[in-house]
Image 1 (cartoon, one colour):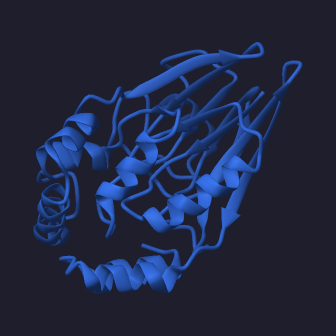
Image 2: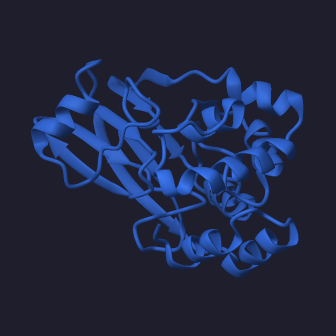
Length: 239
């Protein structure tokens, strides 16, 4: 069985289209999206429509929650909250009531079994859409924050926009990176393929080039509230 896991599109429909095109060539049996579809990109509505056009399991991310109810104090750095609230309002204004309701109704985690392998997927942690678990935390912290709620063989999450994999005490933990807004210094769309055969797991991160300058121009064309900051992230792959 082959499963494609993706996360953190952030309104970058150009990058998402490249990922969808690539997935279609890979004979994937299932697609799973771990949240953050629309907020902070120039094409939020198109990004939602692309996801809804697929047969896909989708869970909620913190940015989906922000679109629905706003960005609150304490959830982002104090110096960023004003502009991020403006970005949230701009994003919500681009969406229909039906699209906002779709984001609001998404579940927060997903568990399933594939060919005898137990999989637990979530956006940030099993208990939070907002907690940050970085690649360099200790083994104990990683296990404690990501694997204690439910027993599984494979744990996958998004949120931090930094692709990595670690295996600790027989548990494999994978961060997908970001489709539309990577922070790991690689300015390419990221997603993960998981192959499961006779109880064996093989995972691979896929990085895809897309038209970065087209997306940077889109921010200008739609009069986005935080153009320069977002262009810098898109071009550098760093926050």
